[in-house]
Each structure stands twice: as structure tokens, then as C-alpha cells.
Image (cartoon, rainbow, N blue to C red; front, side, top):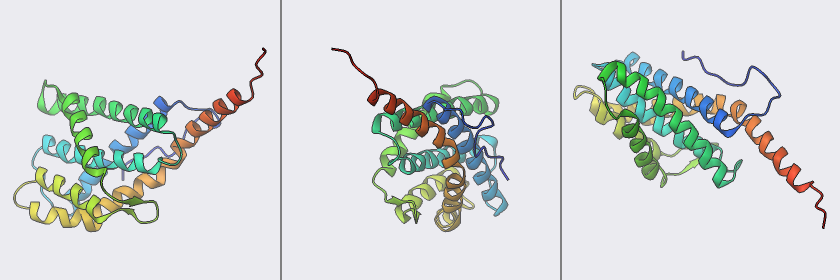
Length: 203
């Protein structure tokens, strides 16, 4: 099971959106990596580490879109964009380190960020709510993209697995850890807002 960071070692200290984004990216990477292992444990074939990273990228894009939906009511648009951008950039750095080991030199970060942007456009039309999680269409898009990255032997079964099991499992893992990560950022923003409202201005 992937080791997830569900909170902070130094409790009570406020965290910046940059710090929260970094922690979210770490957890997304761990959850996505576990998702790839789950595929293999179900008997689906991956042949190379590069192929695993391709699948992991699709899972990461899906999970980052879920984060955006899950914090929608807790942050203003500008703050949410800052948080999601920070998480995406941190993940691009993690991906780069892994790609350099498996695929050698290349513009891996840019390719990864382009995929994130493309998937955000696709997922933006899909339904989501906290009670039921991502919609069937949401999961179908994820399943189709994961299927494209798998070998021909199994790809016709991948989409069904992602819709029925895999995508929901990823969401539940994210839902378990996200609240403990974003609470310090919310508290810091609320305190900053209250300080502004409480200032006395001299005429």
C-alpha cells in the first residue's frame, strides 16, 4: 500500500498554498503509483517502466482534476488556481526525475504539463459530487486514456476495470488524505482575511 501523507508533522502551523500543493502532488503520485500496481495485480500487463509512467500520468491528471473539484467551495478561484498550479508543477518535477532514469533526456516536464492541461479540458465537462464522486463519463474518459497506454493484450478490458473499480479506488484514497492537507491553508487564508478586515485606517 502506498505511504500517504494525511497531515502535517508540525500541527498548528499555517501552510502556504505552495506547501499544500507540494504535499498534494506527493500524495497524488503515491496514489497513482498504487493504481498502477493494482492494475498489474489484477493481471493487466505492463511491459516497461516507461509504459507504467504513461499510465501513472493519466491517473495523476485525473486525481488533480478531482482535487480541483473537491476544493471548489473552499477557495476563491485565484487561490484554487495557485494551489492546482503548484501541485502540477511539483508533479512535473517528480515525473522528470523518473523519466530521466527510464527514457533519458527530453522535454518531459513540458509534455507532462501539456497532458494535464488537455485532460483538464476534457474532464471539465464531467459531473462530480462529493457523495457519489466522479460520474460515469468522468471515469470513462480516464479508462479510455489508460487503455490507450496499455498493451493490446488487455486494453479492451481496461476501461471497464477503471469504471467499475480502479477510478473509484483512486478517488477514495484521495478523499481520505486531502482534508488534512488543505485545512492549514484554509486557516491561513481566513486569518489573513480577518486581519485585513480588522485594520484601523487613519484619515
